[in-house]
Amino acid sequence: MTFSEIDLFGVYVAPISVIMVAAWLVFIPLRRVANRFGLLKHVWHPALVEFATYVIVLSLMILAFAER
Image 1 (tube, rainbow, N blue to C red):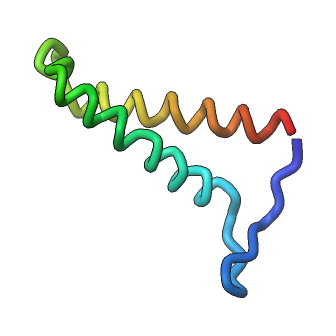
Image 2: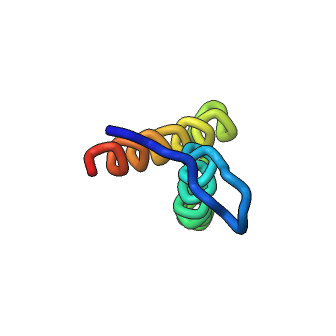
Image 3: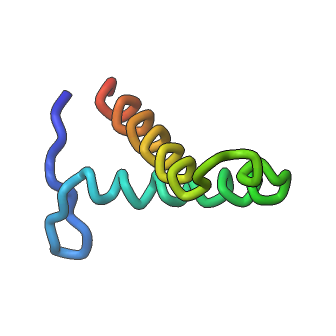
């Protein structure tokens, strides 16, 4: 389980920042599906549910990349 810096056009960035962007790209369709079916109308705090979903997606992606 080692993460090393990623070279993007000559700039070294932390791997967590790249994984966060990838998790955001996965989260956007999930949020659109939830809005389309009206799932966020049935929760107490929609922004909190969205944030928790993003954190879950991010942690799953980190665990998936850490297994390699």
